[in-house]
Length: 504
Ligand code: BES
Ligand code: MN
Ligand code: ZN
Image (tube, rainbow, N blue to C red; front, side, top):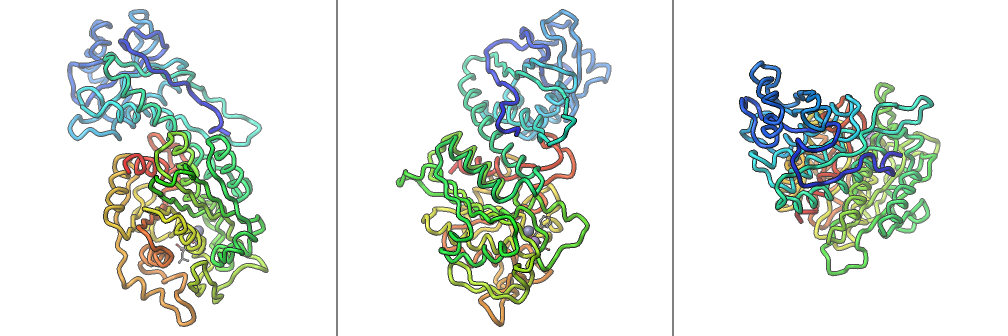
């Protein structure tokens, strides 16, 4: 599996980019610049104005996504120079740096580059902080080259870049670059775990596989791990989690990973991820069309898993608990049914309207379990509702609900910083009424209208701490290639959670 390997070596050195012995060097250019400055300017000078000439002729414009290729033919050690378009300088941000880095590294790969040297995008005239710009450059370079190692007889033979060297002229910036690159490496390793789990077919990424992955991470990074099966969950009265698991052939696993479990003086943050390894809808079965996409219904748990790996790698000074209730949702003679009344681990009763509203069921017991840690904040991530995709769009933003304004603001800011955007949504009291039940404390579905809000309101019933809920339906799986996210599992949530915790 990809995340076990180190796909590309990262080095950092002080020096001038045009003097590097790499086969490929990467510099950049803002939109509408006629005379390149900085590193591109230095290369331009050494090449007798070759870049300026391309700009004058209209071959290079510096617009976002553009990658110009020059062949210096011996004037400098590198065989080729890539000029990454940065877009407009006005309002330039880290996402611009990520996209420029991603476009350039993919071009380098396609040209069969092996040794690549790059400058840090955005740390020059754009004035972004050096560590953040270095992180963005390296993170996006690694993420753009991510590929799922699919089980095929005919292996993907596309080229692999061996080394990426980050080159900085100013020796005073090296320490910041070092720290940004370290963050990038940890975050990418975590994101790759999440992407891999979503990309695996549902007969492979079973709850057992989720537990094995957690065990590997725990072993490698010294995390505390608990994996509970049906009996374990039964002892803890997790009726909601077990109801969904009743029809499952694959054994369910309630997984808990804990970073800094022994450190009682640290703030405790709990992350909870929906881990439905395949959602058929159960007895309220889904239509044939597109059911296969429900292999991504463990995207929340995958994000928590990846975040825990990154958090451990970066050794964040917090007590972080990752809770992943994992099971399939299958129709079966034993499956739970509409009209069943289920008791969750906090004693609240739930009338089942639809067995397809299973995510909130497993999260209910996950959220109750989170309470035992006396958390400063609990954040859950779930591919919870189709209504969320209708409301915000696929690959655009996740819904953000919170019972705590400060927590909401922190998450929204983190989402903005890493470009995993969150959009605030309301927890109106009206939504609670629409899940009122005649036979139980609540129903598990409020029907078609306001489906994002009613599902969040359902979850709130199981929380008694500062809490936020992210509906990531439409974010976990991408149907098209994005700048630094190939089609498939996105790892959405990992970068966001780590950014949020780094700033806690
Ligand atoms: N996993 C689905 C939600 C989903 C839909 C995720 C599309 C990603 C893309 C969830 O379990 C579900 O089936 N929700 C139902 C809830 C309804 C029965 C109240 C839905 O959205 O239709
Ligand atoms: Mn469902
Ligand atoms: Zn689901």
